[in-house]
Every structure is written in C-alpha cells, then in structure tokens.
Length: 430
Image (cartoon, rainbow, N blue to C red; front, top):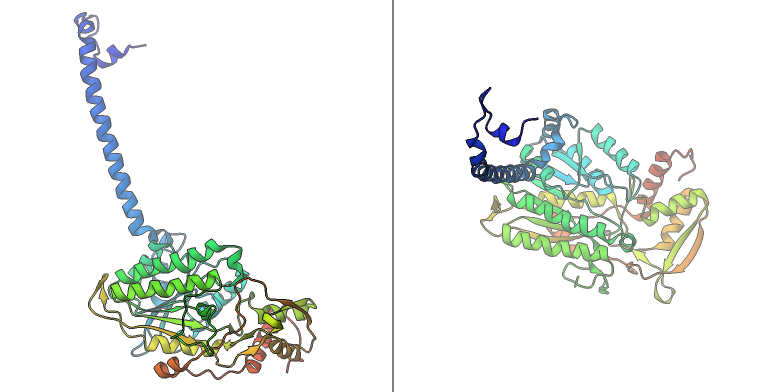
C-alpha cells in the first residue's frame, strides 16, 4: 500500500529520491497549513450557503404549499379565481377560520353578493373536524376555496398576499371556548395572540395594506356589571383566559393601527347560535343530549340565579360583519410605513334581548317534543359569567345594524338543520 509520502510525492518509476524523505516534514507542514485554510474556507462557504437557504426558507416557505402535491400553478389559479370580484366596487377578502361557524356563513354571504373570497383554516380537532370539512364542501360548491394551513405560518400568509392583493381581511380564526382554556391554555396563546400578531405583521407589510375586521368577544367585559354592556365600559377585568387573550388582541390591534396605519375593526360577538354551529355551545349540546335521552347540565349563579345570555342568531351576526367590512375605511400605510391616521373601532354585535338558559331549554323541548333530563348545578369557577347583554347603539349608528331574529325563530331553524344534518327522520318539528 502506498505511503502518505508516496501519495503526496509520487516517485519516478525505477528511482528512489532519498532527499524527499529529508524534506517530508517541512512539505507536509506546508500542505497541512494549506489544507486547514481550505477547510476553513469550506466551512465559511457551507455557513454562507446555509444562511442563504435559511433566508430563502423564511421568505419563500409558503412555496411548499404550492408544490406538485398541492397543485403548484394550478392552485394559484384556483386562489385567484376564488378571489375574483364579481360586482362593481366589490372587495377581495381573506377570511381566516373560513371553515368555522361564523366564517363559513360570512364567506357564503360575501360570495353571494359578488365579492372575492379566499378562506384559510387549520381544521383543528377542538371539535369534530368532519363538521368543518362539511362546511368546506359547502363553500367549495359556491366557488370558495379554503386553503388548509396554520395562522402562524408567515410563509403561507405571505404567499397568499403575493398571489392576491386582498383589499380586506376578515379574521375569525381563534381558539374558542371559555372552559377549554383551563385544559389547554397554550392553544389560546398560540392562536389568539401569536396567530394574530403573525397576521398583522403580514398585513402591515402588504402594499396596499388591507382593512382588517376581526372577531373579538363579548367575553372582554369580564366582571363588568353595567347593563347593558357598552363599548365604553371597562374591559380590564377578564374572567377567563379566553377573555384575556381577546382583550390582549384589542390592545395589540390598537398598537398596529397606531404605528402602521392599519384600519382595524373589532367585533364583540354575543353568544352566536344557528345552523352549522359549534358543538361545544350549550344550545348544540343540549339538543344532542335531549335527543339521545342524556341529562343536560344547567348552571346557576350566585343565590341560585339563572344564567342569561344575549343569544344572537347567525344571520344577524353576518349582517354585522358585512356592515363592518363595508364601512371599515382604508388603511393608511404602505409597506409598513404609516402615512396618516386610520380608523380604529370596536362594536358590540348582539341581540339586546338576554334569555335565561332554562327558557332556552324550554324552547328546545317544545321544538323536539321531548323532555330534557335536567341537572341543576352551581356554576363552577371556570371563567363563565352570569349574564351578557349588548348595547348595540354604536353599531346601529355606524352601519345600521339591527338584529331581527328572536330566539324561538332561530332555534327552530337550528333544530331543523340539526335533524337533517345528523340524519334524524323526524317530521314532528313545529
């Protein structure tokens, strides 16, 4: 086997040059020094390449959603088609949480009147994802594309804004539910705070910047006891982590409005109900349990007082969302640089007619023609509040918001949908 010396200094065939042995150490040291330099340069080039690739990954990470497995250029075409405006003066809207309860209804209403709509949803398993997939199918049938992805994926959001110059963002994606926050608090921070900031960062850098309407919550009123709840009331005493994240969202959006000129409207929803609703809501679970002959749990507050909610039918919420979008005004920034003040607003969207929970159960019993097995318990310390009641005068003044559906009518529509969706063959609903 040839020695290292022979490899470095191959000999002439038939001859042995002895002087090479004497100079070997000196030559080897020179070579080693040269090799070390080359090694360092190689490391530098590797690091430079890695940095470049990392930067490209940050800037273009959204591209992985547009590879062959996703459809590539074909998907971009679908997104553009979905965002196509079909009416004079219409808007192109990115709807986050589009496969959710409110998101699906508003998306359909926007599309119906000729606006362009692109949805985004991560289809998480907080409740049965099959219901979200069913809503997605309904949206697809009307030409609305829902992109599956996480709100915290800045690359994906950036790519969507590269493909479509959205005029508006309707941000409805969130981790919902008051009680679940005690089980999984991190999911609320991830979705309701970090996700919101990720979205705002993309919007503030967009050129042109979109106007933003987003879902806050009546929960921000927390321990407030003024009745009815008004936008001017205190919102610094949240009763749950969910409420705290929504309150944080209002402060964060105010900051982005102030610094970057984003037009922002926050909507404080009051107990939304109706067809295609959320299974974790009381009216939904009550209906399911009554039909299955299972007991329902009804909470009572202090001194055995019944809880009351300002139940708001989904169609009325949709009208409020459309009115907010239509009157949102323009953002005043360009590429993250503010040129002047932009609108910043918060509105209550409620029904202004609180109903006690036992009354809700009474209505369901009549509609289902079945008696509920009631279990009355004291309200635990899980973040729920004893009552909600919306003052909607500000929304009435700004965009003529006027709820028109009473609880009896709304629940009748919900029950009919529920029986149909879950395959109950019942014709005895009033």
